[in-house]
Image (cartoon, rainbow, N blue to C red; front, side):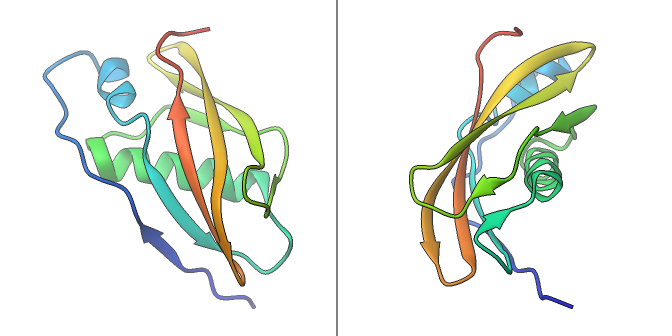
Length: 115
């Protein structure tokens, strides 16, 4: 069984009084890291961590986050995921910012508008 280590590495932002989808968008730009056992982070692990960090940051998890592919453990590698909040879908870009051993740090950017 491999150990997973998650570390918050980005700034926290206060959520403004707005609709739930807008609150989730206020979290755009969070960064975090995840310990992995291989050369990539599984798509389910990425999706779960994006949802967990958004919930931690703004107090509400998105309805769903899905990522179609694994995130390669290489600086600059990225995948596009989809976040659903209040029936609207938003694109999410997850980009690797640092790799140290089995720790992969990534940045999350939620699109400004539903797509």
